Length: 50
Image 1 (spheres, rainbow, N blue to C red):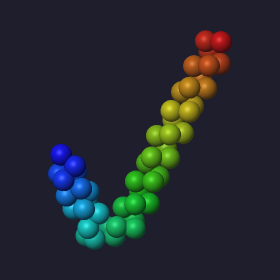
Image 2: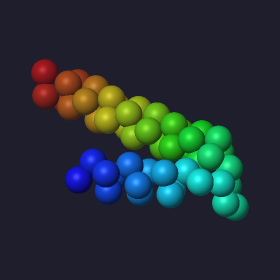
Image 3: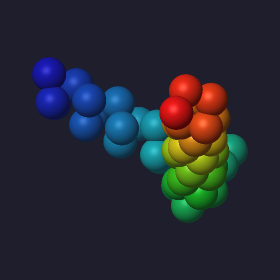
Image 4: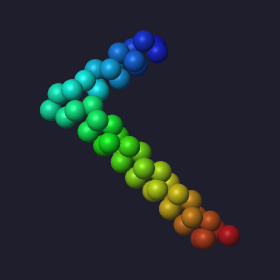
């Protein structure tokens, strides 16, 4: 299963319309946005329920 993932990962980050660096920056931005959203939800829950 790991072989399939790494094959997919390699294919995704090959240079095409976007470079690998640009794809990495987009992935980082999405991961950051998801993390921030999760923290905001946790804070809202804490404020609401405590």
